[in-house]
Image 1: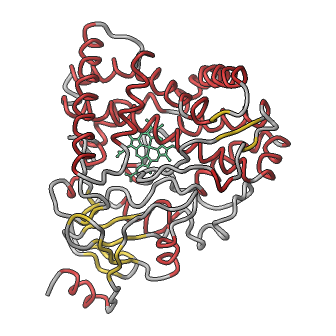
Image 2 (image 1 turned 120 degrees about the horizontal axis):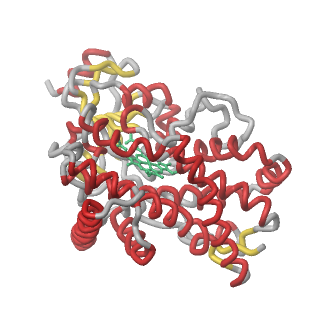
Image 3 (image 1 turned 60 degrees about the vertical axis):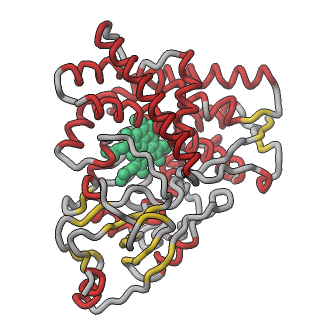
Length: 412
Ligand code: HEM
């Protein structure tokens, strides 16, 4: 009897295996597959277009929190194991924290944690505001219509994260392009080769920067990495992977998330009016937008059960692969009634947009601060900001891992 059959026998459940291809979706539409699962079987059985075998998928808020925080589900367990995947051409960063378990993963994160605390982020806020003001000045000077992403929501997080790390101005466009390549869904071998070359080039670049900091430390995160590596708290591969993850996610995730926030704001005038009338609501609005926006396309990295575990009445066997969707959990109507409504006054437990458990995002406070600075500035400084094209004509990126518009033509 296969592990799957045993699981069924143990619980009397017999979920039909579904095929999930994670095709591109229009605008910010919620994935209908997740909607179906949230209403249907609690723990689904899936196949995907690539990789091997079947996996479990949990979508409910409660189950997602359980699977992502229970130590019997391991990220390290997926390394080298044949599992079902969204793409056949994954080029992972060796020794990245995303593929490690505590305590190794916690040790590596501990090196940078102090740079992403509330205090550290509060200290950065005035500088982030200055960066944003300068970018908005440049857009105003060039005049409408303008692509808000090109002028603001792309360069803003790029400058913030690059300054934190210490990536010089002249190299930032390159770092941005590397992130774009590394974080695009790879469709064929030629694209996989481009990703491999990008990984090589970016790794060599960060290696050289870290060497330079070792010789000449500065007040930046690259210097912190160099010191940690020198003291043996990070090995070489961990240092390079963590540096890349911070630079790439620090730009790419925020670029997309705040562009999506602006799109939602511009397509819901009542939200913009509320923020203008009650500036104190910005913090709550950011949280609600984080919950509402289906940030991740498809599924992130799964986990492997290290022993038999029951989840939602289904027995998951040791060695089984388990995916979860934070996006689905954020739309679980048992927790968030009318999840498709952007409701700034919503009550309820914290959303899972930044993940949960030991792999929770490293930069939530930084990302929140950037979003708050952006939204509060936009509603006061550009009260007339609007899309310069009908909402249906906004172009969205395709083949993405993180969803977001390609451009946001605006006028004001
Ligand atoms: C709105 C913006 C952002 C969103 C929605 C977001 C979301 C997430 C999510 C869902 C995870 C994965 C949790 C898991 O694997 O279970 C993650 C991991 C991660 N994020 Fe973010 N993120 C954002 C911004 C940032 C920023 C600004 C940084 C810069 C430090 C960052 C760095 C990371 C890193 C290094 C990880 C890997 C953590 C680990 O595996 O231990 N992210 N993020």
